[in-house]
Structures are given as C-alpha cells and as structure tokens.
Figure 1: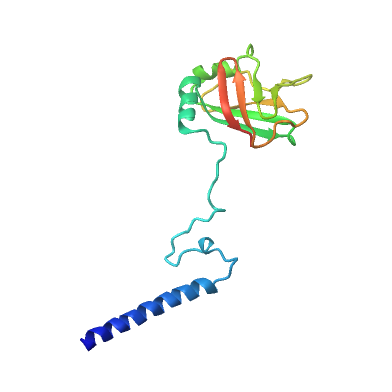
Figure 2: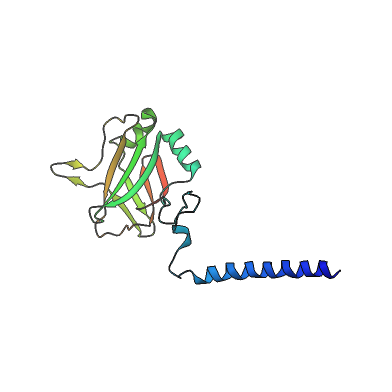
Length: 175
C-alpha cells in the first residue's frame, strides 16, 4: 500500500511541475510578441492576420451566380478614383450576348447611394464624350464606367446600387 501511494505522490509532483513550467513559459514571453506571427518549429507556415487576404467587396456566391447566369457578368466592383471625384464601376463579361444590355447607349446608367441620398450620373466631357464603354462586349474582357461624385458624397464603405435599364446590382460596397 505504501509503495502505491508513493508512486501516486511522485506522479502528482511531476504533473504539478509540468504545469508550473508551461505557465511560467507563457508568462515570460513578451507582451508584444505575437506567437502567431512566428513560424512553427516543424517548418509549417503559420497564418498571420496580415498575411490573410481580405476581400470586402465580394458579393455572396448566389449573387455572383445570378449576375453570371442572367446578365453574363461577374466581378462587379465599385471604387473611388481621382481623389474621390469619380466612382468607377467595373465588371467582367462572361457571356457577351447577355452583357449587351450593360453597354447599350439607350440606357442611362446611374449609381444610387441611399446613405448619402444621391443618384450619380455619368459625366459628358467635350473632347472625350461619356465616361463609359459602349462597344459590343467581348467575353473575357473587363468593362468600366465612371460616375461623377461632385462634392465627394459617396465614400468608401457605402453600400450602393448600379442601375442600367433593367440591370440592378444592389448592395455593392464602395472600395
């Protein structure tokens, strides 16, 4: 009986010693040292917050499928350019036949920002004309149009809608 209790006592001492060492090691590491940013000893790369790619403007998968199937476009993006004076809307054509409605000259595109309470239009410049592409779309190419943001009312982070005839892209986030 005494031999069994002595072995239990030794095992308990070893367990307490291990817990103490682990706790001491954790407390002795500097506060500013981020354990995630150091590579693992086994050679496996550890993902850091800075290394992760963050895409805030990706639409939900079903929305992307909808725009691809119905309108023949994907990769919808809205971004401020020229110090915020213009808002550029870009899209990638996956089906040229379906995407023709977006380049049709008879439809006047507008960018609606309910948060700012504005509806932006495409400006007409004397020597350049309208800041949009109206040629027949080709599959695989990226097309754009630029909306005038006079007064810089539409800002990055706003949720906007782009309307071109029957085409409505809602909930796009301005980059």
